[in-house]
Length: 329
Ligand SMILES: Nc1ncnc2c1ncn2[C@@H]1O[C@H](COP(=O)(O)OP(=O)(O)OP(=O)(O)O)[C@@H](O)[C@H]1O
Image (cartoon, rainbow, N blue to C red):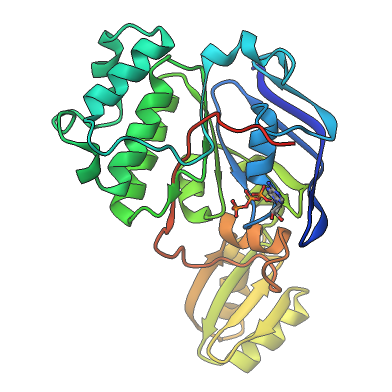
């Protein structure tokens, strides 16, 4: 494995007339290895876009060391720019142009063989609609067109900022499948989001940022495992007696109106055996595993509750911005 993105001690402060000095990124570190589908997660305003913009040389960092595909950024970014596709600003397309024409123009401008247009249209699932005008496209189709434009140069690294933003569930599913198929084709994907349920489904690794700082990083399974309190939900025919027996056995028990949450359970059969031996019968025994969303809420301080499993709600997040315009200080 080799790192395709390295960020160390990144710091970026903005100065605005209205709000004065604003620390957007505060000594942040991140490493993305080749072949990963890496989720970059954080609440709104936590510094994700600023980090990605700094990485791509679109905003000047105050401090820190960054490298993309082994080349120092932003100083030597031009050496690897042809191997990186990025969508970090909302792409604007001419509504009167078709996707085919749009991509053809971009291919010619970028010195990419025009034959590549049909390939990327197929990759993002726009074949069959490529001769329709972009103005008639759904948001999801426009976002897939944005991804197609980023894929023209066959990048090794694809960076997508909030690619699911504004998409409906079907659009999110399409975007997820697209990212997966890109990863299967060997593209390293770095995708930022503040919606966790989807990221949990597509990313193998994750970096979590809150208030400009790194709060967790690693394999999704490892980050989740760190928050696993080995809890089970228990319903029994005699809840009071069950709670008493489980506490006496050294387990933690939290009473809820219609169930108990029992912590420190390394083996689920311990609970059924303990209760059964004393004539208390189980109605339910459900392992509670933290999901990424609950971990995220706990880590980023956007939830006062510890990381308990939650029912993943309908995905609401979405996709993409391309581009490389406007460097600000
Ligand atoms: N150009 C700018 N001028 C002033 N402040 C800025 C600028 N860009 C970002 N900020 C501030 O920096 C902080 C981090 O913003 P950033 O857009 O990086 O967060 P984010 O995690 O991408 O959020 P979101 O999910 O809402 O896009 C915010 O407080 C934001 O208001």
